[in-house]
View 1 (cartoon, rainbow, N blue to C red):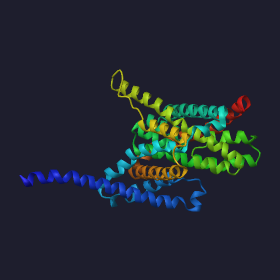
View 2 (view 1 turned 135 degrees about the vertical axis):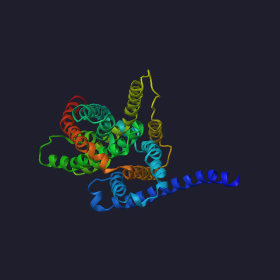
View 3 (view 1 turned 90 degrees about the horizontal axis):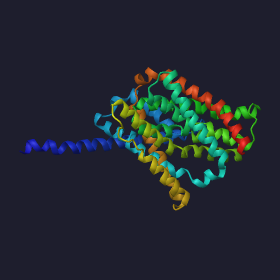
View 4 (view 1 turned 180 degrees about the vertical axis):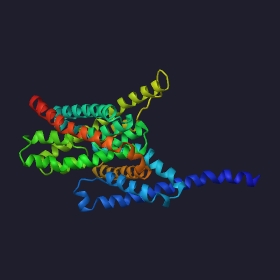
Length: 353
């Protein structure tokens, strides 16, 4: 009996060891990415560790993937799926209701209008004009509409889409968000944008992709504009929760219709509810500032792990199939953020500013 039962007892232990090794490998990779992103020439480009992580992970996954034992794959997948849900939930500690109240109705109005319109236009352009699948179109639109790579991660988890689709969406965030960080301040200094301090904060915070890119762009205008832009951007981050809930209902109905059922299983993004709960915790100031800072640092590292793992799982051959069309969708969304976002900013400031 012993020869028959021993393999059964040993196999789960080996699988667990392989998964732990995979998670440890991703953690060490993310630690190296964090150090790399802190280098001045990378930090000055506004590239967060999340973005550097998916790029570095993608290079490894396509060039050196044979060097990683197959048993580690489950650990990489754990980091790219389950860990990212936890990390997105803890992202709520970066937002407080008091900060959102500082920009008042104008900031909230710009954020809502930009997020809703960008999601609608990006999804429509991706699916109807560029003939992308629903997930790729939504991920590309979400990264531009809400909070860059973090939004892509949150939507990827809700949609349960394939890693290469998230990689294409993040690529759009990197390209057009970086362009914004340099073009917006240049347009201000050349006199092409006639905006006061509030207008700059509303426009920069309401239309630039990543939080780091918003800060980088607005800091080239004034400290006051940077403060307003950062708060408006965090208001957009706050909208991640209601948007994910709506998307969850839509995905549920779509699956039900595809399967010929009246209703599918409700795809509730529980990590989004955790995000909201932690926003409330942060607003009540029940945690010491040092604890909040430490948790935010750990959360950034967890998000970097998730992005690195997504990069490792991404294959260039998969991106080639929809790469140009996804990039074209990102460009359409970017054009809307500039033109439509400016129109929304000017209109809201005149009515409510």
